[in-house]
Length: 111
Length: 116
Image (cartoon, rainbow over all chains, first blue to last red; front, side, top):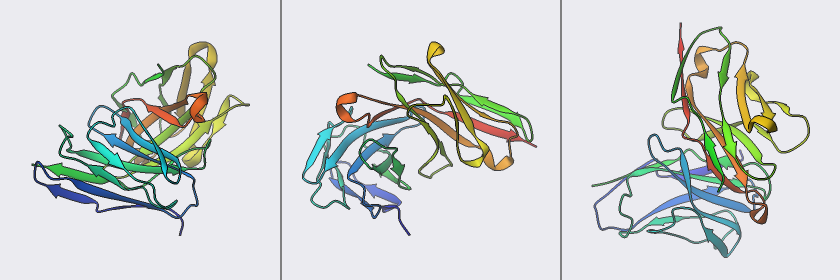
């Protein structure tokens, strides 16, 4: 079964801790993306990667970091510098120049 | 900068009635346009896309959308709504020729409620 997996589905952390969200795809897509979703604000792009070992900042990259060491994987780290980390995080992938497919999401709660 | 406006935050439609969700975009060139649907707590599912060609595009689950360049619109329609269509719908524009039109900008979504 081809698709995108995100784990865990729910994540709870204390303020001041870094946390890493997992995203894996077996669609053989070159490009991968991270979005943040807040109520009433739609989705906003955090980072995207077109190829392995390369990635670019999206519109709201501050307080986040990513790596792309393998084609299948694009983990997102929410650092303690992110002022409002509680949100729903969505990973997506695509063939470059084609539509994006989304994973099921991870809901992060920081208290 | 590109932007997407979905003017209706909530819409309630009776089951079996027709549906139209509005989407207006702002972008200087021909955009790539998408409609996605999201059930609560889930990821987004692609309903349909417009890249070029025929301005009326068909999607999954009986949905269609029409690209109107003169109105900068890409409205989503369905002739007969089913209770299972209740969800949140997002319009998105893929802009930025230098990035392969991969930087999606999303509207804030329209929540569809279906009444019996």
